[in-house]
Image (cartoon, rainbow, N blue to C red; front, side, top):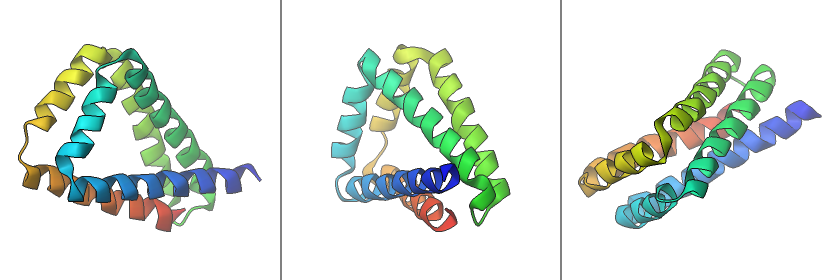
Amino acid sequence: MIFTFARIVVQAFGALIVVASLWGLIAPQSLVGLVRRMASNTAGLGFAVGIRIVLGAALLTAAQISRFPTTFTVLGWIAIVAAIGLLIMGRGRMAQLVNWVSRWSPPAIRAWLVLGLLFGAFLIFGA
């Protein structure tokens, strides 16, 4: 039961990543603007940390029933370490990182979003 729920959570995250990546491919500055607004307040940092913890826990839980158990386990731990890294980094540095990315050219942003699209599809397929 818990494994099935974790699989659904991973697939939902994958679908959200695909949708966000498609949105960014169509309108990269719009997506960057949303991320910039979220990074500019304390709730945004909490949201970013929470999302990574939930995704990490879901990946770790769903790993044993996934198509790629080792990969899901590694990705789960990476997500949790990323959450800790964001906490250490803090809101100020997170905002600086988002501002740096916002200065990238639209083709560079789109290239990363293609990777996001592939990652989201991998999560859906793998779960």
